[in-house]
Image (cartoon, rainbow, N blue to C red):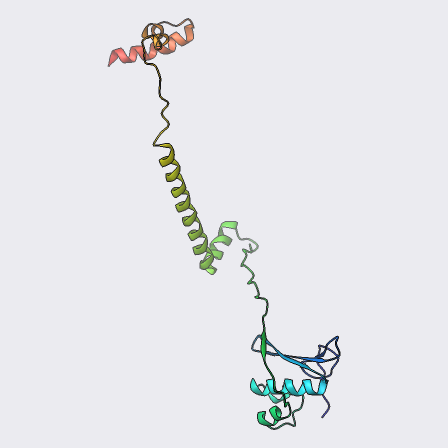
Length: 194
């Protein structure tokens, strides 16, 4: 049977690629994980190593480069140096965040309510974020008050009669502006009535 073509490389074997050095590298994928098998001097040897990985993973026979091999033991015998499967770390796929899609005839409020029903985890995460932020702000606010004291009190260095002479009650009684005088007269009359 003729070897099968693979989309990668030019070796005509599954999982085998020719490297710039002239050697052949073997890579194997199984259940969303990628494995590096090794580098071999010929494409034929590399294809046999790939077949050992297929047997170990218990994949279907159609994934083999040499389906005429009847067992895993026979496949491993044909690769005297054996194989070392080293997992290739893959980039973690970032999950696309859900978005709100407003349908025709739907208001923004209806769309947001629908989104909240369909994705309660986002609503919970948002609430937790704001609760945490509010708690941190309260903590910071309490610290600032403790440092400065409960209120800002400006001490007056002198409390002599002379300092307060400008604020005498006599001046309050009289006013040069007639409009202001009428205004204050209203309050004075209401004080007298009580």
